[in-house]
Image (cartoon, rainbow, N blue to C red):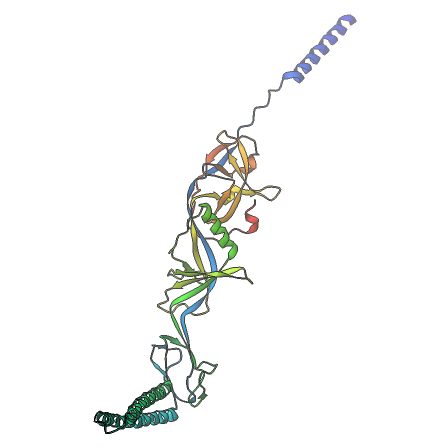
Length: 397
């Protein structure tokens, strides 16, 4: 009886051990394969991209004239209102002209005396000529009479020139506006003594319509633009309007035109001068105002724009983009970008038209891995939005 019980227990232990062995060897199912991660991409395309540069500048008058006296005397009257508009030829000041008027009268009398002497010399010359023809006077006396007549003519011409000079000087005593524009404050009052060609201006007239905006651009940017044009990657557009922004960032409302670009680089700043001509009919712009000008630098006919969220940095600090290849593989590209256009990078190297750049789901993929590309909903290029060039840290080589 004891032998039977021992055999039963042994059979039960074998059964339990077999069940445990079966459960440990293959009871759990094999894990399933991970699905291919899905990422949002933007397919790049080439398109004409207009490049602009925002430059700071100051406004300067179109014409400036400093009014100075050309004769010495006492100011007797000021004939304009400070800050008013004057026209060329308008009277501004009167200087005491008593001495200059007397000089004019004396020159006028000298001219009359010379004319009288001329009349006498002419009569003498004519009479001598007649007598010489009848051989009643010598040829030498006739020549003296003719020479005296010519000298009298020269004396009249000199006296007339003296009279004109005194009249010019007398006219300087009545100071007029040399140009049309807005006149500033007067530096002298009635009763002040002024001297000819003095250093201090009596007043300054400025023509404010149109107005100039003087800008400065880096010579290194000029060299880069010329290299791009020489390579055929940039087309320079002449006559493109220049947008003017006021100090508070608002649009001035009227576009300017590029007047000229200087050919000399300032050695202290490494920049060269640009000048823009802007209409200013309402005199809204005043001399010395700080403004910014959005200047057209040309058009890149086959520019490639990449969304900023698709450009990241690797451990070396290089700008990189993750691209999904036609085979569905993730590839990392080193990108060179020169500037931003709106919310996108203008790509110089590393990406080309047709590349699918990952903009969402970068944390799901690794270079060399698989990815399922789904086109992102919003990825339009704003090619006409001006922006400053990218900082040094934003464009890696």
